[in-house]
Image (spheres, rainbow, N blue to C red):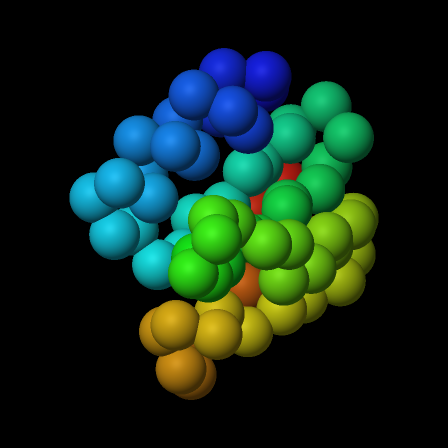
Length: 69
């Protein structure tokens, strides 16, 4: 997970990836990050049976209940 949070985030930012998700199957949570001028910022941390809508992909709602079923 450390590689995803540090190394990959720098690479993704360099190439303009506007949004990415860190999925932790052990904790059953998703951290959603969005690209800003100075790097990624956490949009939200979603746990277990919650759901969220992607800020980039309007209309895409993700239910963690379905992801971790």
